[in-house]
Amino acid sequence: MTGLAAATAPLSSPVLWLTGVERGLMLAGLAVALGGLAGRGLARQYRGARPGPLPPPWALRGALAGLGASCALLVTALAGPGSAAELAQPAPPGLRSGGSAEIAAVEAALFALATLLLRVRRPGLAVTMLCGVVLAEGIRSHPDGIVPVAGALVTYCHLLPAVLWAGMLLYAIRTAAAWRHHPAAAQGVMKLYATAAAWLFGVVVVTGLIDALVLVPPRSVLTTAYGRFLIAKAVLVCVAAGLAIAGRRRLRRTVAPGAGPALVTRLEIGALAAVLAVVGILTVLTPPARPISAPSGQAPTAARVRADRPVQQRAQDARRKPPANQVMNAGLRRA
Image (cartoon, rainbow, N blue to C red; front, side, top):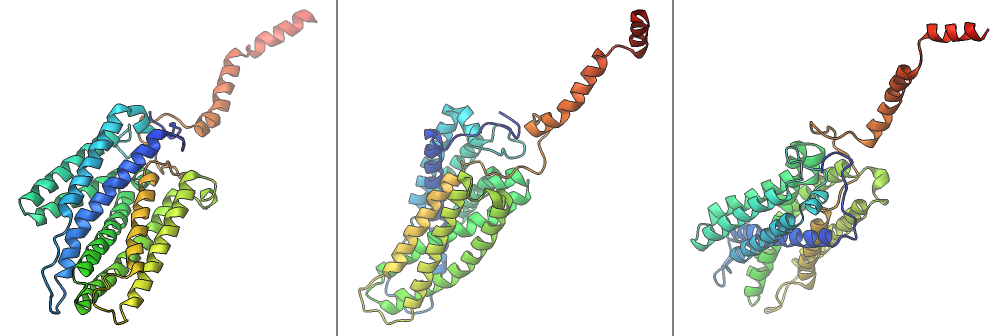
């Protein structure tokens, strides 16, 4: 299925929701794995007295979850190639069918390698494999289908800080819970996270705005399913940011031993999980914007057909119209 006028799956399609949930779970696994490893590296920067060892990151669990979700995406794409092509519009350059199966296979292989490396205690190489998943998502992303290469780069700069934000928060909460009887150490780790999260949030917002401007014309924000889900994502990100600000203010107060992480901080991880779920749905919705250049061999769009039709019609009329001398002779005979 090719062309700008290729069919897209309706919002009521079960395959759309299934694929969106699978991709959301894959992103959640990526956040737990990659963000957990980054969170542990950040927590090691705490210079105060440590009341105990840092908790191990859930990187292996996250990689296994990402592997399972990627395999589910692959099976779904292979079971219904037509539906998979409808969910991958606009298609990335060089992948006419949308590349859903190919990208899912690559991501499954990368998660499998990351799992193996984590099992043999090689987290550094595992991080490389997990970053490869981010690269694969950039190739598959909607912005790359609209603006090749540049769109993928924007996706890298948007997705990587987003998964780091969520995963680092989860690890920071686990560390604060493990050190809850030592409030100074727990708050010290949360302060390190809060500083990093502020920078990550800034990058997410800037790249998210660029994505929105590329994918959704202003007149289509409220009139398309993609635009409405994009609004829902923006609202959830704002909620997460508000909870993060509230949690940062709480870090200035004295906390009783055993209190653990603040409620607003636990709600923040819930808001970020909801953001990843909405992003999973957004990846299978077709944005209203159109690619700036169509791939070679692409079928003509309806607008182009309408534009060319008068020319073709005039050519047919010219062929059907008798020569001028025949018309003159016929007139003289009648006279």
